Image (cartoon, rainbow, N blue to C red; front, side, top):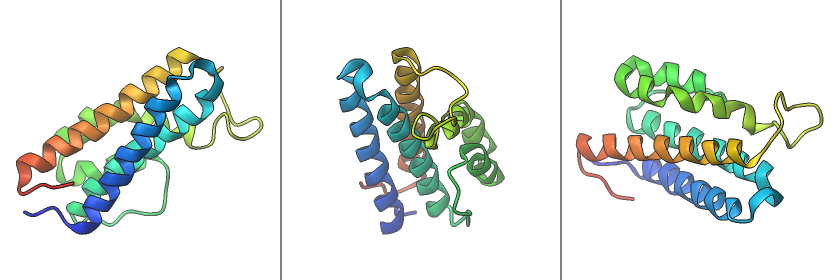
Length: 136
């Protein structure tokens, strides 16, 4: 199946968010709240790309676990591989709003967030490559 234009748009934005997260991480502690936010956004948009390509409707949500439940309807194995990215859901708001964080932000958390986003995007791109014609 050829990758739809809508799927491609989601993937391009997910790649841009991941690129932003990686670039901001280079500044050390200065922009960590934006690193984790961009990482969450990348993972979320990657999953929405998969759902879009699979023609699975999804609600307007930032909850990665909820999106992965929808992924599991068509691909339980992929959903399971991506489950660790659920941790990123909190970063949609944590550290950007008063009293929204349940943990202290540090460089290690930011690095893990980037790794999770990178893995999510990579897994989805790999799946789409094996599922048919793919272009981003």
